[in-house]
Every structure is written in structure tokens, then in C-alpha cells.
Length: 400
Image 1 (cartoon, one colour):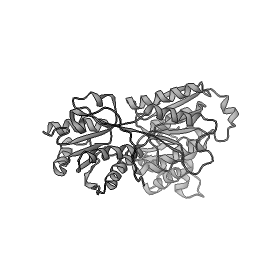
Image 2 (cartoon, one colour):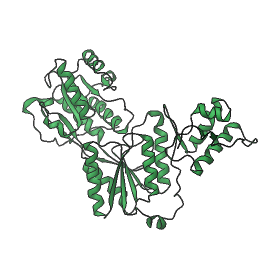
Image 3 (cartoon, rainbow, N blue to C red):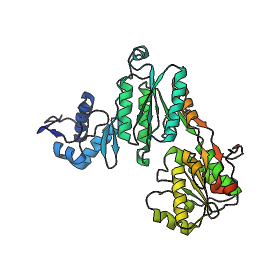
Image 4 (cartoon, rainbow, N blue to C red):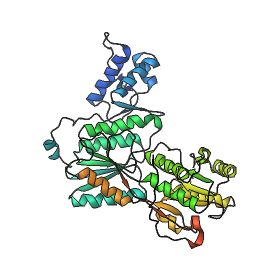
């Protein structure tokens, strides 16, 4: 519904504004009424700054002040390169629980995923397994990494009166992290049961179930150090503010520290997938003998590029991934990796969502459940004599 303020040749805004208010506040209140009336719905884009400037005949500064006022009150989220997105405005905050339970959907929970890969499906299997114990159905939907779509899905789930939602939050840039955390908290404050899975927005009070990402990275890098590798690079995409990625990078650094070595920040390559030649130039400059990739897809692509450039795996560069996707064991040089237990993550997330006393109720510290991981040693680090048996993962380390 959002777009230009003009539709059918007519403005959707009143022709005059209250003269006893500052201009920015008059514009803010006008937009607030349009949102409350449903003229702009959750997920809609407000008119652009330029359109609002023309409509209200004011400066860009005034428009931005009006939008900042709406954002402060939680009515919109401003997304760089996209515009001002209308948030969900909780209509259920004062609805009695007994009335909500009687509504359609009271025997259903939803899994709002950010992706649709095999790991996400393993989380879904775990959710369904635990939900069946409560005789509850599971509705699956994917935001496909789009924040606006995530907001739309959550609004739909809330209106349907579901028992609750397990959400895999989409990645957001650092500038939107705080607002994203507040957005989830507003849903919880409105009475919607929520649990985050796989990752979370730092600062959010919503309970979370993740893999022990720190420990997985720590095990991976410790393994490389134990087999004699010293110049170990970390390779990731540019989503380093995502909680799971940040924890893995921290585990990478602590493995060096506990071994009495200094982690070199220059060995962290956090722009993978942008330019293969740039990555190979980085490798030529650092001359690594070990590589820790923050997921298996990155690891497998790195192996392809390294081998195409004349380097052998593991003789020249030993490689460790993270996830243990099905393809990892089927490569001609099987990949050493950290195995996540997605199904157990799903089981635990559903249990937290469906238990009689919601997780985190009455607590000031967010519930953060970590599912153990296992290092699976294969040929990409120890050669053809590799064992596929998981390591115990038992060690003593500082974790900050």
C-alpha cells in the first residue's frame, strides 16, 4: 500500500496541519494517525523523504525530524537504501490470555526462518519433534533474509493468535541492530511468546537457543594449532556483527591466546564472496598454513580456489569448516568441520516456547541456551589417515 503520497491524483494527507505545533511534530502526528488507521500497514514503506518534503512543503531536516520521532516511538524502522518501514503496532497487549487462547491458532506455533538450507530444516525437524509431545502443530515460513518480510510474518502470526513463534532473526547491519532487538522485545511485551534460534540480536530480552559457537571455533583452531599450523587465517562473509559469527571469531582469537600466541587481526578475512582474486591476493600476502572458515560453504569454496591456485589440501593449507553439511564428508578431500546439532536446537527452542512458565519471565538477564558442538576430523587437516570420529571437545579454556 505504501509508496507515493498521491494515489488517484489525491493526497492521502490532510491539506492543513494544526498551527499550534512544531512542523516536524505536525507531520509526525499525521503519519501516526495514518498508521493507526491502517492506511499504512506493517511492512509498508512510508513515502520517501523527497515525497514528504513536496507534500508538506518543508525542508529535508524537518522531514527527518518527524521520521526520527516515529522511529523513537517504535512505529517505523528506517532501513538504509530502502526507506521507512512501518513496524507492527501491538494490538493485543491488553487482551486477556483466556480470550487469546480461544482464538484460532491456539494449538499451533510458527517457525519463522531466515533461510531454507539443510541446517534450517534440521532445526525444523527438532521443533516438530518437541511440538508433537504437546500435541501442537508447526507452521513454517521463511523471511529469506528480508527484514521487511520478517516483520510481515510476525504481524500475521500475532493476528492469528498462535501459541508462539520461534524466529531465526535475519542478519541486519550494525546500525539497525539496536532497533531490531527492540522490535522483537515489543512483540514479547505485547504478549506474543517468542524464542530466537541459531542467532539473536544483542540487547534483546527474547530467550535464545544457539550452538556453542565460541567453543566450536575454539576447538577448530586448537586442532589446527595442535597439528603444527601457526599462520591460521579466519575467513567469513561481511556479517561479522551477527551473533553466531561474532562468537566464532571470538573463539578463533581465544584459541591463540590460550596457546600462548597472539592472534593477528590482519589474518581475519571478512569480505569473502566479493572477489575471488582479492581473496587469493590476501592468501599470497599472508601465506597461511591453516584456514578456519566460519561455515562449510565458505570452506569448500576456499578449497576450490586454493587448489586452483596450486596449493594442496592439507599439505600446504589445512582447512576446517563449521556446520558439517552433508557434502562435507563427500568431497575428494573430506572436510574437517564443527558439527552443529540443529535438531537439538529445535527441540530446545520448542521446549522453551511451550513450557508452562515461559523462559525468561520475571528475569532481567536474557535466557541464552547453548547446544554443544563436536569437531569432526577428516582429511582436510590430517590427510588420508583421518578419522571421522568426533572429538570429545573436553578442554579447559577462558571464554571471556
